[in-house]
Image 1 (cartoon, helix red, strand yellow):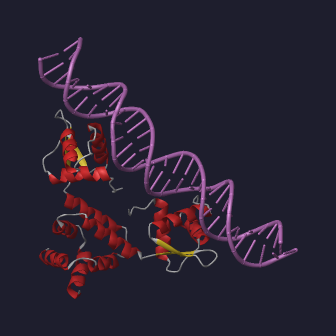
Image 2 (cartoon, rainbow over the protein chains, first blue to last red):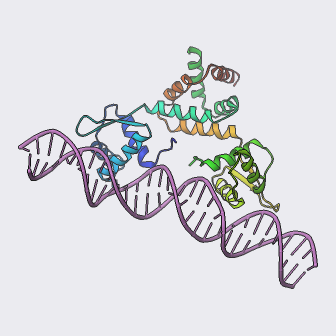
Image 3 (cartoon, rainbow over the protein chains, first blue to last red):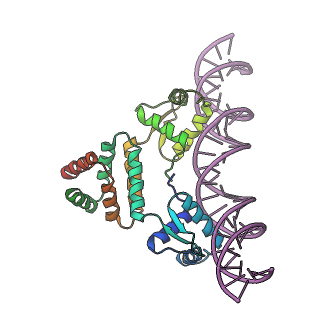
Length: 120
Length: 120
DNA sequence: CTCGACTTCTACGAAGTGTAGAACAGAGCG
DNA sequence: CGCTCTGTTCTACACTTCGTAGAAGTCGAG
């Protein structure tokens, strides 16, 4: 249960890019700008996807303030890393998966990994 | 476009577990066994999901033989590694993702990674 | 109390998935 | 050659998810 639709992904991208919490209206405006021209969504549309994202545990909101303020629960990087870990978890032979994974990684990324593993 | 439904996942698990190609009937029987009791599916059901998996590029079949024989295109490990790489690809700050990922990995897995990175 | 901004409820169409019957095709038998 | 199996493809329907938004409800300001 981790797949996001296109609009859901766009909203998450906005929330991940700005650390401060945003209102639905604000997000709606930024969506319009981002997508260029014909992307004028109704605010209720944005609110709906925000609710769905909240139910998925990706977004939380402050209910106290009058225009509720929404913010991503975790960073984009945390989220992605968790997805990767989830994928790894489905495998029985994790070593084999890691071997294939390392094989598909760029040299720069391999260097990063070496550094991280050395220091950790 | 990589998410699998529950039945699709079960079928892939069977195909991944046995390297030889299987027929739809064979898979249907093995699904019945695996799930324990009430999981008696119609063969057409299995054929439908096999077609869908074929369209997704996860399964290929020999059309020559009369009961067509189905087999996974790649191993479970390759598939999982590709999913992980795909997730990594969506990130902008890949180093940060890798850092989080390494942080979430067991010590045994970290050791495996060190070995793999050293030899590669 | 009323108005307006904001949120929640309800809804609908498209796509994906589980499920399978109906229709079709080819191989062997009588 | 035509029937009957066995197996494949077509068609279909219900359920869920997602994009999209109008209708209805709520709450603070005036």
